[in-house]
Image 1 (cartoon, rainbow, N blue to C red):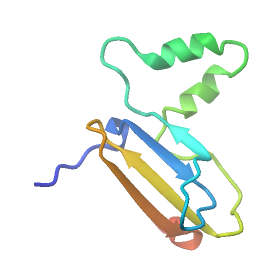
Image 2 (image 1 turned 180 degrees about the vertical axis):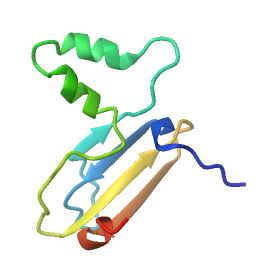
Image 3 (image 1 turned 90 degrees about the vertical axis):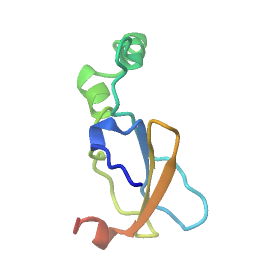
Image 4 (image 1 turned 60 degrees about the vertical axis):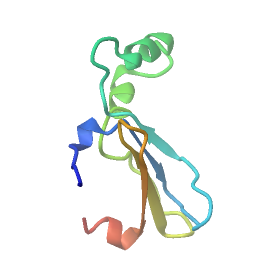
Length: 100
């Protein structure tokens, strides 16, 4: 049985913006799922106060990557981890990635 989740419910997702086909190299990391009682993002935000802006910290909770230039491989990989620790990786050529 397959259960779908909203993007905001994903525990973490990572982007390799120049995937070469063998090694996944995290170049952007996002953690959109909010904790129910104590939010670990608040602790991190307080620890980085003055180093990373509140707006930038908000971007790391998002479901859209930050802008980046195409790498030599012209291919990206996205790794998604759900609340149960299951992982899936999707690889796309950059021209496919912008189409949807």
